[in-house]
Image 1: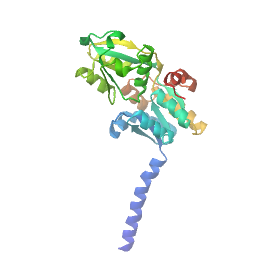
Image 2: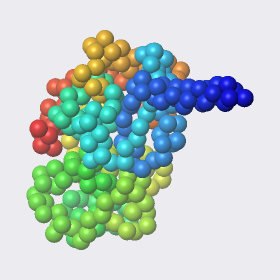
Image 3: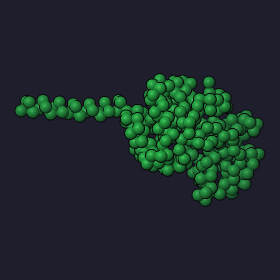
Image 4: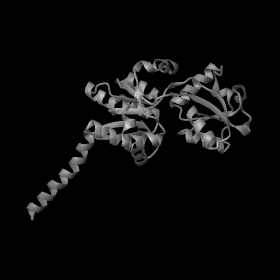
Length: 273
C-alpha cells in the first residue's frame, strides 16, 4: 500500500512539473489586448502562434497586456521573446531593452478626427468648444493626435475643448459618439473607413501623417539564427493555412520586412529617445 501511494505521489509530481517546463521553454509573444480576456486573445492569435510554433519547433504562447504603459514595463524587464504591437511600443522597447523590429504589416497607420454628420462638425475650426474622445492616454494614436493638435495651433487642448474623455479602446470612442457622450472621436483612419462602410454617418475632419503599421519585434539578445527564423516565417505567413486564419481574422495582407531606420521619423514625432 505504501509503495502504491509513493508511486502515485511521484506521478502527480511529474504531471505538475511537465506543464511548467513546457511553458518555460515556450516563446512568449506579447501583445496589447485592451482588457480582452486571455481566452479571446489566445483564440485571436491561435493561427499565428500555431504556425510560428511549428516553424520554430518551439511552442509560442501569447500574453495580452491591458495598456501601453504595462506593456512597456514588461518589455523593459525582457519578459517577452517576441512582440506584435503598435510601432511606438516596439520602438520604446528597443530603447529600453534592445528589442528589434523584424517585420510589419504593409501600409501606414494615421490618426483621424471624426464626428457624426448630425453635429455639423466638418472642419478643424469647428472643433473648438466641443467634446472630444480619445483611446487610452498612453496609446500611440492618442499621442499622434496631440502632435496634430499642436501642429494646428491647439497648444492647450484642455482649454480648447469643452471636455476630453479617454476610453479603453476604439470601440469605446465609437460608442461615445453613438450615445452622444462626445462630439468628436479620435481613432486610426482605417477604423473611420470600417465604421462608415458599416453605415455610420460621419465627417472626416482631419487626418494626420502616416506612420509604419503594426510591427513584430524580437528580443535583441536572441541568437541571430532564431531572429532570422522568426523573420523568414513571418514573411512567408501568407502561404500557410494556420497563419492565413489569423491574417483573415485581422484583415491583414501579410508581413513585410522592417528595419529600425523605418521608425526614425515616428520616434522624432513622439519624442522617443
